[in-house]
Length: 126
Image (cartoon, rainbow, N blue to C red):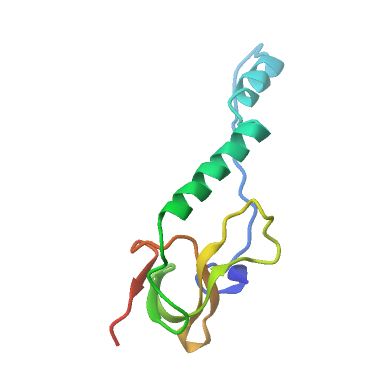
């Protein structure tokens, strides 16, 4: 999976913490105000649908299985497209597919490309 490649050597859970320092602060009011900023399940579903709509409008994929490409990891790395419309087994159906799965050269592992865009994947000229 993508977690075990050189492009992403650690699987970590990201979290943020806010620390408020002061006297007589109303924790409940602060929590309520911050929680009101979170998306509801319906808003998140709408966001995911809009993201999928953008992906759908993008049209045909630029690369095919077997094409040689450069992928942006920590640095640009060469590889070969081995699958299109890729989905990890752990992804729920509401998560859009990745346009490509790539086998990196030199045994560096498999990755998926999140978007068919030159910022993430480019044609390689061998």
